[in-house]
Image (cartoon, rainbow, N blue to C red; front, top):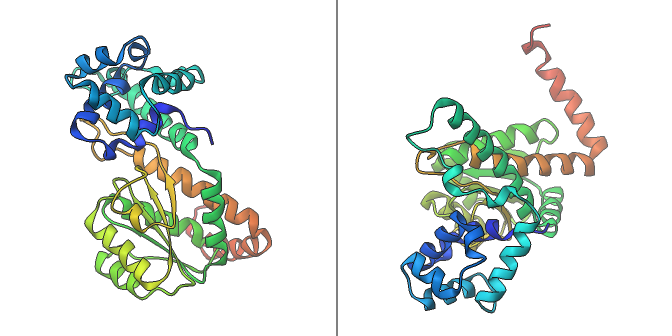
Length: 286
């Protein structure tokens, strides 16, 4: 997929230095203005030196400031959604319930759109190849990401019996340490920097199993152990810590994986789905 440049900046955010983050914050909040600013203008607006802007460009893998502005301009032409000012999207104390509801809606829709724009079809195809050939598929996560991992397991369990997940971190650690090279771990972590999750990934790698990581940032302590990285797009404002946008973006990827797995193994999964559906049929009111 062709990712837009503002999304690319957000995905690289945790790689930036303190000064580079000032540059990134200003660009994300004022993309239209930046297109008409010189490098010195941008540096002054961010209260950093010109060299910090150069380093920012280097981190973004462009040759210089002019190439960066060209990439930003091309990206912004493709959609008007991305040029919305950050202040118009983040929830503030002054918002009434109507404005707040609209911003939450916008944020959740944006999370899915960004995840779609970040979708690497080669990585997703490779992930599906691993899942198809795995002896066991084990979902991992800590905190809020544990809930996402459990939802993914429950979804896949309707069509496949080789899926597992446990909500207790110590059990996850023991499970990771005893995986075989024929097993695949699917690890959820928004930040990619949760200590328990990184330790799980390390143990999986040490055991010789393969790892699919679903996370926000392309580079993090967690992705150092990843065989495949699938990026989700979601940004939490000051008043949105613990919002569902991150979970929604991760579950969007789970839906793609589930649908593709079902498509690849339709006959077997259909037969299994019929059995699991019958097993819980009496739990619903007619």
